[in-house]
Structure formats: structure tokens, C-alpha cells
Image (cartoon, rainbow over all chains, first blue to last red):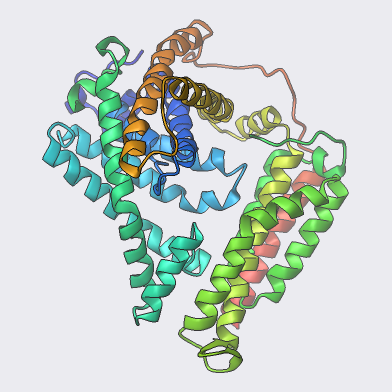
Length: 204
Length: 253
């Protein structure tokens, strides 16, 4: 397995490569599975949230931003074999992995106020990146009928399509991303030390 | 998960890279076309291709399920609020649907439908391992291919585990009909065993992979061979040419 010591002298590319240890590679399918299964659990519990990015955030916490970003990308590509429209949202999931990973490296997942802030930053990143995709590729409509109804409500009150889509996604996702971030942190901390990748020592 | 339908139609025999190239090319084309007719015509053609491959019903049904809600929502949103709305089409009580908006809504719908159909045809007609071998032949890193395949297999496995944990917690008194706060609490009692278990299995998997030379560099051989025929090359180059022509036509006009 590659070692991540002496990072300062290495270039960006080899620093990224050093994050991809065998354990990190194996972590990615697990992250994809977690992203998927969050959706199953909220359906069973009939909760009004998605929890479809817990895996991306968790992998970013455990193995750094680049592995987190790849987890996001692979999630949307793999799930696209069942729902091809998800490919369009791959950039959002990639960005969530990157942001969560960089925040984690700077210690933003260590105290509760900072975890809340991280959740909000991740939510805003998602909302900003998904707005152009929703507006340009899907005509302003995405997800459940309830979500579309909310967008129609904002349009009817006179907002333009961009602001309506952005506001809808902030309202719908703020609780979702906060819960996702906390679940990811709790789970990451619940993993025994010896099963954590090296990177996790910097982030938790 | 990966709903492969075995067969020996001309569509099945194409190289997976060709199918992906066609899907990407069609995606670019439908986003260049200005009105719903072009994309609608491509959808009909794609259903014809699905018929040749022997699964027109499955593609049509799944595509309808995936994009049906979009059709309704986008026609409402754009029909009522499209900025270029000028010509009234239909007035229902106090609300008016406008021609320009409905047309734009249909354009969005058919664009998405083309992409959905093209990818579903690719998925239904391609053996997943053959797809990965074909991509590795074209220069995809074997590690990325592994991650993609492993994810495909891991998703249903995680779902099985989740079901088992839900049943185990129900046997211990978990109430799926309790109030919202209780159900939120129940989420953690399911997440932690599920995720911790999955993460601990990571260690075992990484040792198993290492023992099989996962991080070795050098030549690799594959169990299956995926031929890249002349037909494939002809289709890929024609697709590229059509994309360029459509782009030129849109820029000149």
C-alpha cells in the first residue's frame, strides 16, 4: 500500500495518487452502496429526505477529497444503469465529495458547530451546482411531484426559473444534508481505529 | 441491477464502446436541436433499434416510468412560465398554457427521453464484463473498471443487508409507523450496524485483492474477448460526422 508521508515535497498529481491506496479503492464500492441504501432506508421509514450522499461524504472523511469525488462519480454512473437521468447529476456528487474532503482535512468535522457549518456548505454547493443542470437539461423540474409543486409555487409568486429552482433545492435539501453529514461523522467515528484508512487520522 | 438481456442481435454484437459513442453523440445532437420534432424522431428510431435487439417493450416501459413524471411537470412549468410565452394554447379556468412553453417543455422531455432510451438499450444489450473489457482495451484503468463492477455487485448486496437489519430491528420492537422523530432515531439504529459492517469487510476485501495482484503493473489477460469490428468503426465515425454536421448547421443558421 502506498504511504502518504512526505506529502509536502510531492506534486499535486502524485499527492492525489497517494490517496488511492488499495484500501481506498475498496472503500469506493462501499460508498456507492451506502449512497444507494440510504434511499432504501428512508423509503422504509417514510422519511421526507433522500440521504443519497452519505456514502460520498463518509468516503471523503475517511480517504480524502479525491477518493470522495470518485465515489460520487461512480455512484451516479453505476446507478445510471437503472435510471439514466442520474448521469446529469454526477458533477454535483463529485463536488460534494471534493468539498467534504477538503473541509475534513481542515478539521471541519471535529466539533459540532463546525459539522453543522460543513453540512450547510455542502448543501449550498449542491444547490448551486444542481440549479444549472435542473434548469438547462430538465426545464426546471427534478425529483418528486412535491418538489416540482414547490418550484411552481415560487414561479407563480414571480421568481424567475433560476431563483425558483435554487430556493426549492435549498429548502428541500437543508435537513437532508445536515442529517447526512451527522450520520457520516457518527459512522466514521464508530469504525474501530484499525479499520480506518490512514487519511482518517487527519480528519476525525 | 444491471439488467442485461442476453441475445445475438446485431445490437448485442456491437462493441460496447460503439454503443456508448452513439449514446454520447445522440446526447450532443438532441441538445443542439431547436424543436421537439427531431428528438421525437430519434426516440422512434431508438425504439426501432430496441425492437431489432428484441426488447422494445422493456425499454418503452422503463423509459415511460422514468420520464413520465418529468413530462407532466415540465409541460406545466414551462407551459405556464416560459419567458418567451406569446401565443395562448389552452385556457383552463384562470390559468393559460402557452404554445411556446409547451413546445419547449416537450423539447426538454424528448431530449431526456432520447438519452434515457439510448442508455437503456446499451445496458440491456451489453454483458457488463464485456463492457469493462472493451473500455480497458480503449485505455480505461483496470482499477476504475474494478471499482465500477464491484459497485454494481455491491449495491444489491447492501440492499439485502439493509433488509436483514430492518427485519432484525423490527423483531426487537422497531415501529415503522411511529412518529417522525422516532423514525429519525430509528435511522441511526439501522445505519450504524449496516455501515460499520460494510466498512469492516473493506479490510478483508483489500487483502484479498492485494493477494491477487491488484496493484501490480504490466500486461493483463482477460477471460473474455470483445471484438472491435469494421462495422463498429464505421458507426463511430459516422456518428462523429453527424454530430459535426448538426453543430455546423446550428451555428450557420
